[in-house]
Each structure stands twice: as C-alpha cells, then as structure tokens.
Amino acid sequence: MKKLTCMLVLMVASALWSVSFAQNSIKKHNGMNLTDKKVLVAFFSRTGENYAVGNITKGNTHIVAEMIAKATGGKLFEIVPEKAYPEAYDACVEIAKKEKEAGARPAVKGDVAVEDYDVVFIGYPNWWGDMPMPVYTFIGKHRWQGKTVIPFCTHEGSGLSGTERHIAEVCKGAVIGKGLALKGATAQNAREQALRTVSAWIEKL
Ligand SMILES: Cc1cc2nc3c(=O)[nH]c(=O)nc-3n(C[C@H](O)[C@H](O)[C@H](O)COP(=O)(O)O)c2cc1C
Image (cartoon, rainbow, N blue to C red; front, top):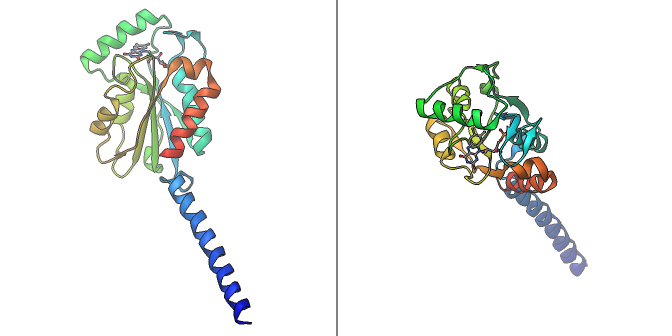
C-alpha cells in the first residue's frame, strides 16, 4: 500500500512538472507573447522598376509585411505618399536622395489609430541607408510612448543601416524590438525562403 501511494505521488508530481515545463516553454518561445497583443503592421513599399527585381506589381516590403501580418494576426496599414514616386528606378533614386538631404516630410494619405495597438511593426525599403521620408511623416503623426516598435526592412546589400537607431530617436518612449533585414529579391523571388526567415525572426522576438 505504501509503495502504491509513493508511486501515485511520483506520477502526480511528474504530471505537474510536465505541465509547468510546457507552460514555461511557451512563455519562453513566445517571449513577447504576441498572441495577447494588438498588432499593427505599418509599411511603405513601392511598385514599378526596382533594383535586382525588374518591374514589380507588389513591392518587396509589402510581401514581407503580409507575411508578418499573417503570422501575428496583425492589421496591415500601407503608408502611401500623396505624390507617388516615379515608376522608373533612376528617377526615384534621384528624388529620394534630394528628399533625404533636405530632411523632407512628404505628405501621406490616410492614417491609422496607432494608439489602439500595443505592438507596431514598421516596414520600409532601405533608401540611401535610411527609411524613405514618408515613413518619418507617418511616425511624426503619432505618439509612441509605451508601444513596442519592431523595424523590418528590405534592401539589396545595406541591411538595416542605422534605421533601428533612427526609429528609436523618433518613436519617443517606445521599446524597440530586434529588427529584420531581408533582401528584396529574396522576398520577391524566393518567397518560401523569405517566409522561413520571417517566421524564425518572429519566433525569437
Ligand atoms: C530610391 C532607392 C534607394 C535605394 N537605396 C538603397 C540602399 O542604399 N541600400 C540598399 O541596400 N538598397 C537600396 N535600394 C534597394 C531597395 O532597398 C530594395 O530594392 C527594396 O527591397 C525595395 O523595397 P520595395 O519594393 O518594398 O520598395 C534602393 C532603392 C530605391 C528605389
């Protein structure tokens, strides 16, 4: 009888330990616990002629933004400049350079209530080692105190450049999560590979 009681106690203790281990693993695995949070995925992306991908009808960053929104259950919001950038790559590069040098804040269409969200992913292509200026316009329209902001960018060699730092400077009071940089051509032409990278990054957040 004593043996039986001992075995029962051990079995219950082992079952309890398993449950608590599983719960801890879930907490660790999903450190930011995105499932409990209201998530916004705000992004800027451009179609037309682009470096390494030719003429595209859906921008590289747009593709990544959709992957993030699907994985997190987040709401997508596209940052659209009132004046569209040229379809031609070289013409766009010239305008982007001038806007960066001038610290321009081009007007953007529409808006989203950022204050309704806990976690905001901000996505953009790397333009001249920076974010496109309309992304600054969007950020400047909102208060970021208490938000978690997670940057992601597509690029063709420069990675995030200094943009995580720039976001920390302009999203005052926000906690900045670890950013993702993905090559635009990978997002556009190797979507399964891109999705694996995006999923692995989200799991580690
Ligand atoms: C105006 C402009 C400037 C760019 N500057 C850079 C750069 O400095 N470094 C880099 O790696 N890629 C640069 N690129 C390439 C883009 O970052 C890359 O193609 C990106 O994936 C485009 O994303 P989108 O399709 O979402 O607009 C530039 C592209 C454009 C149009």
